Every structure is written in C-alpha cells, then in structure tokens.
Image (cartoon, rainbow, N blue to C red; front, side):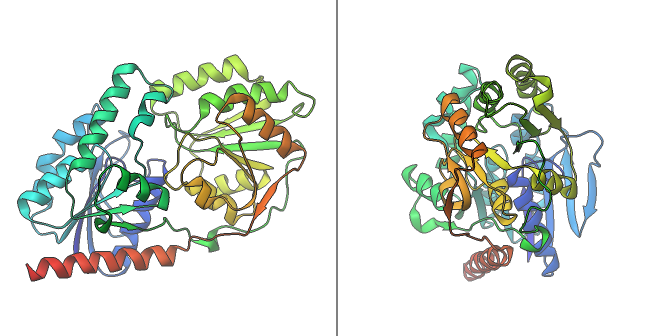
Amino acid sequence: MRFLFVLEHFEPYLGGAEKLFGQVTRMLVEKGHSVKVITTLHDSGLAKREKLDGVEIYRIRCFNRFLFTLVSLPHVWRASRDVDIIHTTTYNAAIPAWLTGFIRRRPTVITFHEYWGKLWFSLPFLQSWQRLLYYCFEQLVVRLTFDHYIAVSEATKSSLVEAGVQRERITRIYNGIDYSLYPSNQESLDETFSVVFVGRLGVSKGLDLLLPAWGAFVATDEGSGGLLRLVAPRYPKAIWQQVQGLMAKHCPQDSLEVLHELSNLELRAVMQKSHAIVIPSYTEGFCFVAAEAVAQGIPIISSGKKALAEVVTGKYITMELLSVSALVESLVKSRQGKWDNLPLRKFQLENSVVAYLELYNRLHDLQRKI
C-alpha cells in the first residue's frame, strides 16, 4: 500500500506523537509499503526534503503552526495523487488531510492523542484569546467526519465518544514501546535524592506546578540537597521564557539541572540514575515517558490524570490534588520511600504494529469494494 502522513511535527521534533509516527512509518516501510510524510520545517537546519529509513519526508517552512493548515494544502494535494490511505493527527494537519481525502475519495484516518474540551480554559501559559482559539479549533477538528479515528488510550476513546464521535468509528490502539531498549533495573542511583521531568514544553505538562513545588520541597528538611533534572527543549520560545522565569523565581540554582537535546542513550542514563520520574500533567493521552519509566523499573510521581491511570504501574505515588502543595507532599513521600505498587503492565510495540496493519488492511479492502 501507499501511505501519506500529514503531520504538524515529525522526528526529530521531541514529543510522544512524533515518537509514535516515527515508529509507525518505519514499521510500514519495513513491511514493504511506500510512505510519504508532509510536515513542518520546525528547524532551519533540517533538510526540506529527505529520505530516512525509507520514509520520504517533505518539510514545509511555516512562520506559525496555524499557517501549516493552509500552506500545506497544495503539497498534500500533489502528494496524494497515488496514495491508498491518508493518515493525520490533531490539530493543524487535520484539515488539509481531511479535505484532500474527501475530494480524492481516499480513506482518511486521524489519531487523537488527547481531547481537551473545556480544559483549554484552565491551562497555564495561555492568553484568553489563545484558549478560545484553541478550543474552537479543536471543536472544528472533532466535527470533521474522518473514515476512522485512532485513540491511543481508553481515556482518549471515552473523551471522543463524549465529544460526539461515533463509537464504531474509533479504534483504541495503545502506543507501543520496544522493551529490549529499556533495561529493567537501576544500577547506579544518585547519592543525592533526585527526580527528573522529561517532556516537551506543553501547556498541559504541569511545569507551572512542578517548579514552585520543587522550590518549596528543597526548603524542607526532606528536600535539602535534592536535585531536579529538567529534560526539555527550548521551544516553543514563549513557553520556554515563562519556564525560565519560574525556575529563577522558585528553584535554588544548585537544586536544578536543565538538559536539552539528549540522545536516547543519554536520556535513558539520566532516567536510570534518578530516584523518580515526575509527571504532574493536567492530562495525558498516553505518556511514553511513563511507559518507558515503568519498563526501566523507575518509580513515578504523577497526577494520575486521564491515561496516566492506565499506563502508570510498578512503584508510584499519585498526587491527591492537582496543586503545588499536593506535589510537595508527593515529593516528601517519595523521599521517604512510601510508594504504592501495582502489577506491571506492558505496551508491546509488536501489538501496536499488528493493530495498525489490521486497521489499514480493513480500510484498504473497503475502499477497493467501493
């Protein structure tokens, strides 16, 4: 089969969605299929067109992510002439993919990582006009009629059903990871109590809670001498500037280590020497970081919101409330070793691969019968 993926961001952009589509596109090429990706040129140092691991990548320069919706349309139209299936994701890539699929009568699939609804109006780092704009845009995307929807967790599937998407059009396919890449024991922990945050600078990631909480924690006897490692990119620039302000205001310099652009090996080394992973998100559609931490046997402090309740197993602490004080209490409990425990749950990459191929084959067979 011939596939066209229309994605706002793609590897090497850092994020769970980008990791997912990197896996899916490589998997399809390995199975003998043809794959094109149209995405943004988020870094001027990247090639506008290249072929990586058999995947043809076309990057479009956009000064604003919302411009991708319009600027990408002629590129998507040309690239879709000879494809069998178009696959996209939320948010800005969805409209050109849907419109092209509708006109060309190609099966079009959308992956929803999360559906936020009215949560937009309570998230940090956003202006009022941004909250309204993003909410309205999400409402538009969820009302487009795609041939099929993929939800990456039961939490996301339930949210889509509540938003009005027909249940029979939704398939839940968990994101998968390759467990051979993740050693299941921590060999050399830091002598100092340490926690690590890993993720993109998203408005839902809870950094507005984590940084004040960390400052309050290290001021306690339990937190004295603790270290927070923040592994995150410097983009989006506006959020990075606000995060820098929070770090300067709340966190003693010697209690914080900020890391950028780590390789996979470097990231795993940082995770494995930390006493815990902290995930204070307002919501999560799946959370690769949580699944990878569980695979490595690293305890997790989390908000427990949405899909975190499905993914977080092993040793864990769930914040009682989504607040700075509740996160401080969770940090104190983790320093004291007061962990809860759940049987390990795995999300095998092979299972995800099989599920994606089954869905693609089903849609392709239906199209041929029309």
